[in-house]
Amino acid sequence: MSANNQSNYQDRMKPENCKGEIIFKKWCSENEWNCQKIGFDGYPTKNFWLLNPLLRNIPDFVIDKGAKIFVVQVKGSPNFKQNEYDLLNEFINSYHSPEAPLIYAFCLEQNPIFKKTEEVKKLYQESQDKIWSDGKIYRTLNLK
Image (cartoon, rainbow, N blue to C red; front, side):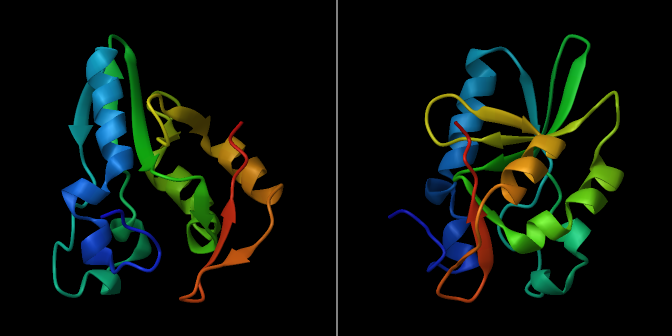
């Protein structure tokens, strides 16, 4: 089964449906990056959605290799929700530093497509609104 916007959060977070994270961890291993999971897996509590959005959206990983270190938010599709876009500046203020920048890894195939947060903002602004059946607004980013 492959999860999508029609699936509930619990179904989308099952390990077999987190293909983006599987691709990302494989890439890290193959490229000798140390990869540490930091974000939530599944519901940490039955009232998860009541948590502050910054807690609910903790980035997925910290990776490092030699002197390089990054905070990484993994995406399994090019679709980017409006509510996440609206929080990007807060994510930058909370999770980004010059020494350990916040980046996005779009893991659609074998190799992640890495984007800085400013690149994600620009790609979002160049895209058009779409609406999922649940009413959530998103845009499909042109990652090519």
